[in-house]
Image 1 (spheres, helix red, strand yellow):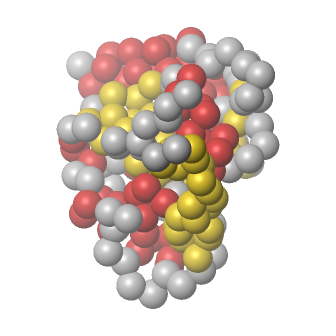
Image 2 (tube, helix red, strand yellow):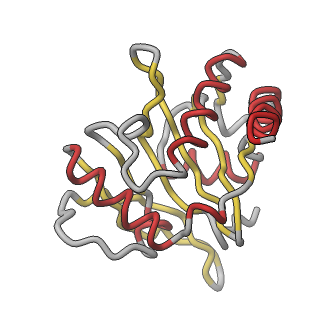
Length: 183
């Protein structure tokens, strides 16, 4: 049953791609690469320390960072996002964190697991157009798979992975819960 459920997640995640638009460049990878990334995420969500997915660097976006309580992570990353205000819009700086060694990555992962119980994250899917716009605002440039939204209990956790030496590694994480873009 677990294997069938995992295969269903792999097939669903690997078959969808967000079309390119005028504002976001989205690069797909093979189904096999996406499937390996999904399997790595599924394995990792069951572990408090996930050496298989976690490496020596990890960037935490501003929306997840506001939910976490992690001491000792001092490498700030600033994100400038447009915010709608009465009569127009204005750019606002938001703060995230960048982990630069394995110990920091593990500390962030443990805080993430404490803030968002991993057993509640039940669905893995591709990003929709709105999530692509939010992500491209945070991290300018092209969006490259494997990148997924892992959902549960209202959370929409974006996980960006890279494949290196046949291994998927998490490089960016954020929670798009309650994040809205208005045109």
